Amino acid sequence: MIILHKTDVSSSEITPKEIFEDRRRFIKQAGLGLLATSALAHSNLLLAANSTHHTTPVGYPSKSALALPNFTKTAYGKEEKLTSYEDVTTYNNFYEFGTSKSEPAVHSKLFKPYPWTVSIEGEVKKNKTIGIDEILKLAPLEERIYRMRCVEGWSMVIPWLGFPLAQLIKWAEPNANAKYVEFISLADSQQMPGINLPILDWPYVEGLRMDEAMNPLTLMAVGLYGEKLPNQNGAPMRLVVPWKYGFKGAKSIVKIRFTEKMPMTTWMKAGPREYGFYANVNPQVDHPRWTQSSEKRIGAGLFAGRIKTQMFNGYTEQVGQMYAGMDLRKNF
Amino acid sequence: MAIKQFFQHTPSRRQISWIKSTLFLLCLVPFTRLVWLGVYDGLGANPVEFVERSTGFWALLILLATLSLTPVRLLWGVTWQLQFRRMFGLMMFFYASLHITTYLWLDYGFDWADIIKDIIKHPYVLVGAAAYLLTVPLAVTSNQYMMQVLRQHWKQLHLSVYLIATLGIVHFWWLVKKDIREPLFYAVVLALLLGVRLYYKLRQMKLKVDRARKVKLSAVI
Image (cartoon, rainbow over all chains, first blue to last red; front, side, top):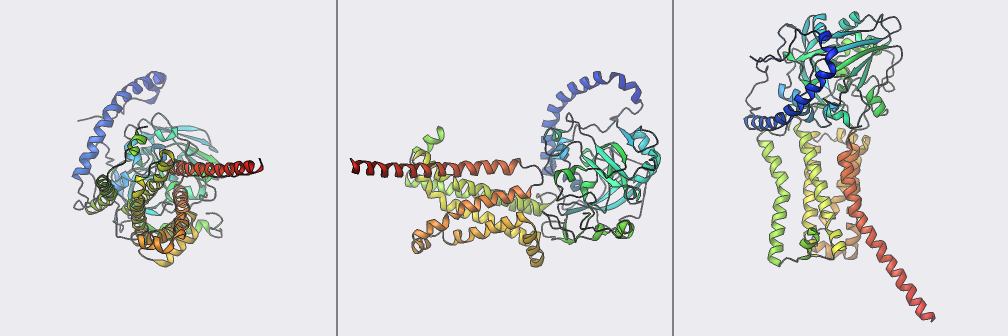
């Protein structure tokens, strides 16, 4: 049996030795990296050779060290046909690990999502930090199957594991000034090669209005397909906002800040004409680059064509009222 | 200067036909690969995007190859490689046609209302569509017969290849979200290929002017 993580070491024991540890880790990784690269090349070849997408039914991967055993299934998305585990974990937008879709799965192999702490700051009763183990105990884990629509015009159906973000917010105790929540992702150039390129203004920042963050649909995801989040999907903790375009779902979150003013998000800075704060899925509001009235479902095959994109990605019933009276063309 | 030496050795007729056949088959490798991957389900999570990207990439690359034959002539004064220009041009047209077919059929399922909306609303699509439309007359007039019919107009018409290449790169540039390294690379290559032409054109014009001045001068004396 392989023990991946030593869970019994408290963070207070490690902290004083941090520099020392870091150096050791670096030396170890430099050696491991070489090995891993060659091993990876081999395993990729093997995978390609053994690839049997045709016959393997969509289902859960075999139990592994990543398993998250205690969760309850919910009715969310029961009727949906799941996107395969392989597609969900090899077709990713995670620029911290590279800008092509296949890079994150490869370049995140050595990423360490454990131990992990998240700091809570801004308009809160008091600033505090919380470890991932405690986060996992904040609320019972649920499995929810959500559609995910990317702004680039493709979509997936993913069985997430997580809990409503509202639970974490309740624990964080924001004060009366808190109107928005800002999510800040890790930007560690040692572990994330994409950080070295000035393609986006790192760290990755996303945000929600308070009512959006408290909406029961908004999920703090810690896993998918019955196991902990793979690194390329935003381990150990990411946001899932199914009625918004995928880029709103900040990955590998290290900081949650409550603010009075609307946060300036990374993509708003990168392209103010293209990406707005709300970024609600809306087939009527076009993007300067991509058609938003229809989408391609990942895994549907070469000849499947497009499907119509639904308003709020089909979640109008749950979220529509939050935008009543708003001009969604202006607030795109 | 190995490249220079390679080109300065003029191949025999037989060698030329061998080189041509080899290049022809090489140009078909990406297409064969796509068919292979398609049959064996190797096109990844987003197969339509894969085919669109791949055919677009090869159309652009072969177009740049076409445009590199004349700089070789200008720089080293050799001409035999110009015999491959038509084949390269038609191969570019082949991949561009696959590219646009993938877009119209596999991506949009010939839904013309959506396609027209996409072309009008999205500048990168518009530029790409314009580039493709401009290649059609070049492909149609690429044969000996049309060359004879059009005479001096043929060359004028085919000058539009420079515009097509520029539009192709703009199409690529506007398509990428943020990481422009790849289109930038091709833009630099195109700038170099056109730059060599421009340099020789200007030099030629200057020589003409100088010569005219000399003639004038000698007349005065």
